[in-house]
Length: 463
Ligand SMILES: [Zn+2]
Image (cartoon, rainbow, N blue to C red; front, side, top):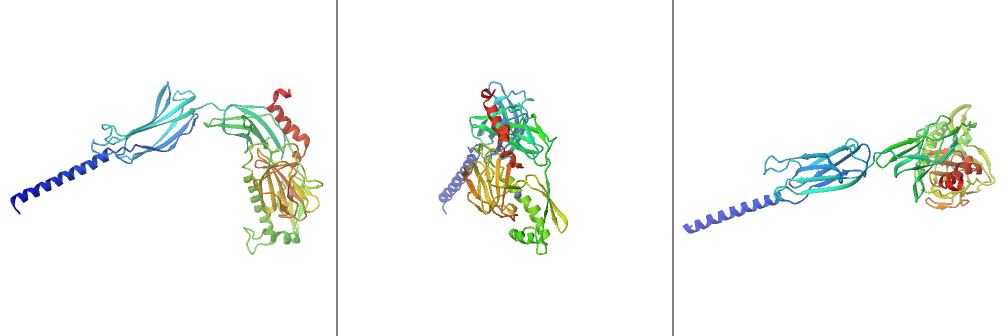
């Protein structure tokens, strides 16, 4: 190699080294100049702030890491309160931030901060540790409008009388002063939601409620309301409860009865090949009955947001009452009482395979085989009121279908735990089975439903 070749080679090596250094430096600089902004994630910031509201979230910067963030509540024209803040200063100008993400939690108590009810903003700001903006970093900010509301909702009761029978139903109408998250009547520990009187008048609320066949005098009843900010109110109302005594009946369980009905429930969950007919009967009468009633209660959680019905509820025509609501039943087998249950509907016997009319207008909520109840149609009449038609031989309607009062929903039969052809007719208010007799009674409907609605919703016409 000549001397000039050696010099040229050195120059090349130097040039490659310089270019490499510049490239690496540029790469590093580009990294430190990254412009990806910090991101706000997993924000839990409700639209309404009550007396004490917790907010939380996460701030992330995948590039240079976080330099700082702050969360504050701002009332325009009044001031700003810092709720949470942090700084993650790198150890030197060349060091990167060690934090790529941070969580924040803050509990906002407007009264302690001296904040009045009204509109406010939650302001989030964050800076990353990039060298952009002359070293200040990329920043991100977000403002979320919220409403501070620390006042409990007000409830005014519009209906005067609430006379209830043990195992019976009632209606209350009340007005609230703002949109609510939840409202209704609490009877013991059973909750009956309120419903908007109409879409035009959502602050006037109607709630059908009930006493179970076990709830008599002394049962605690109150209206409860929870607003969007979680403020809660509770108010009592005038009520009178009539205790009821329910008849007692003993049913004899024979081997021929068991050999007739048990095959209908095969295969029976909970039974094994060694189970005796008596043991199988107890599984049917206790566990299957309970599961069937749970299905009805689960179905009743969803209801139409308007009253689809009017007038009295129809009864199966030309039928005799065979068993009443609330009857206490003892089951006797081989001379011994082996079980006790309560009959939660009315049994009606007419001619075999009689057509069964819908007792009022409604929507089909359930139409299927329901264990001891056999083929069952359950109608939703709106606002949590349901009727049941059980032991049918066939069903003439489908779930979701609207039916008119009197429209045939099926024919009577002997499906489920039935021997003679009959209709088991049940009425439910929310999760509670109630006495159907009330809904067949024109005076009861007038005094407890239609007159109340007319007086509460059109008071000037009914003075
Ligand atoms: Zn029955």
